Length: 349
Image 1: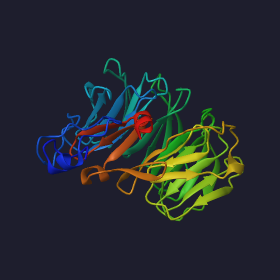
Image 2 (image 1 turned 90 degrees about the horizontal axis):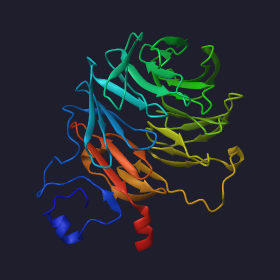
Image 3 (image 1 turned 135 degrees about the horizontal axis):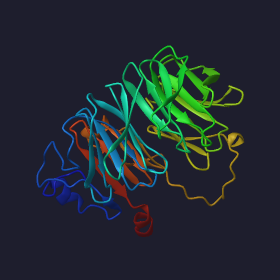
Image 4 (image 1 turned 60 degrees about the vertical axis):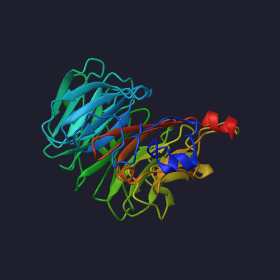
């Protein structure tokens, strides 16, 4: 109903929009294929990312631009121009002082979110760059490319400090451990590789997936490493031994992985996976009331239950979320923000 036009029969029959949906797309008076959202991009939005505190949202597009938005107001804050081909990936540093974007033009650009100025242009990859990620301490930036390498950069100087070689196909994702002492990468070559960022040496190679691997993440305490693949499995590994310790089967195409702060669950864009208790080392109160929001099978789900159905144009979009706020990058070039207030629903439901 929240996506329905203001004067539509759906709105008239179903009533007003629930009060627990705090920020929503502004719809036209009548049905239309296009909803009013954050406008500015003129081509596909390829990636979206929140800053660590959720105060900013970055989007990158095939229109060659990077845009910065205020999620609370929907206002465009900055527009970054400089890339000469489609922009594929974006990431904020942990302290929010830098924004990295990566492109088919084989460059990474570092921007100052406050001023809109380009502060570094990183060159070295020989093919399109698929993903970028900052280390937790902000001292390194990792980039993964179709040239089959992972490169580590000093964000302060723009210098390449390591070139990690070993993958035999394009590299799809990278992730630093929380203490920044380890880096994991995954590839079309069906392997997960663990690296020492300080030396550039490959530490371990994890094998078991039977198709290309799309996503990777470390647990908060560093005792587990998760990988997701086209083989429809998510696997948990022990980074110290290289052993596979848990496997989730019959999954969909998962593009994102992230552990909850207590390491009890693995959040994915296909649902929430519970980790076996024997692998959890962080003690947490029994009364924890963590609310899990995920996108799965064309629905926003809350604690694995269908909660809000997504219209067609949202289904092939890129997405990200911060707490209870979702951001969608659409093929139309628009960005849509949806915020859900569960405290209202719980007190009125």
